[in-house]
Length: 328
Length: 136
Image (cartoon, rainbow over all chains, first blue to last red; front, side):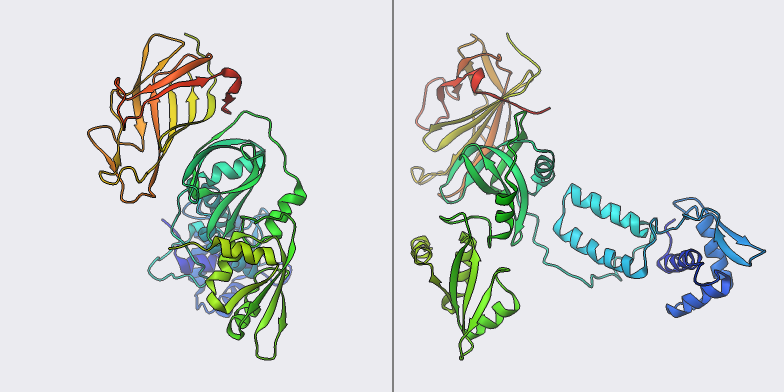
């Protein structure tokens, strides 16, 4: 039978009191006092029952080697390394990890994410805690987009990046409306605005390329020599771009945007890139200076603000933007 | 017939109108052909595709017919995959009996007598030297 939420809280307190024996004498009074400090009114009988339950083997208890030392009049673990937290976590540590779980659940809905979540839940011992789904709501909430096509390849792609295995897959280009067989030496799986991409060296293009996972079909691991990536180029892909599809240049250049006063406020709060500098005008508008590799996504971002944000420099990017405008 | 426990992969780009044969995967159990299909303005009514259940492969390495055993993401006739827009696309795969693992030319035959809309493709070259091997 799972342990109730309240019993779980008391057990964690008992565990904490016994482990903190160097600071306070771990006796019944100390346990009751700590419970009170945390807003739990409890009797010594309840604590005794909790201790008996903690001694039971998993899954009914924790298999805790608790013993009452009559000579010292205190509770001890006969195995001094034992704790029901698995690792000794402060309440703050446990709280931070619990919040991280929310992020992991949102961002890594894959087998790897599940494993990581499971591992963290084990660390927190919360797998034994009875959860009332009706009472629970997340106090930390991220955007959770519906699972997209291609997500099912995430574990395979991460594995190939980690171990260094080339892959064969079929790619469909939305723009060109064409399929292509690709041999890719994958380096990184990257998320950008809730879309996932794999980046690596494409033998087919003889160049570094990103491919949206939603456009990939049937990836197969190849028994082929893996071409390692250049760390500098990979870091540049990760850090020097807003987005994943570069335009024309492969090294960062200065890009200047002009923002109206309202957009300037938003860009002050949410900078486009780490390199962003704002040169404000007296009316509240600004020139937004960026040092990055211009991308399709940067142009899409500018378009998303309508006339409130426009590209001032470089000239070739202004021309590129004009040429990309399509009829809907 | 030559077979081995390897899985060989060929990347191809054989086109018949807007049908593309993209990859052939071959091992001792099956021959898999991966296709991409892009809808086209030429079918301005009755936008659909399917595959005839009698579709087979012919190879220069054997006199046998290698019959279709299974398919993925495509309906077999008389069923149809319907489309709604010219921009729709489909990735699908056809599975056949295993071909010999040697240099050969293969033909995909949906209809013995070629039709305007059938998925027949002829003399597709599969050279062992052009193949890649799947990692076990």
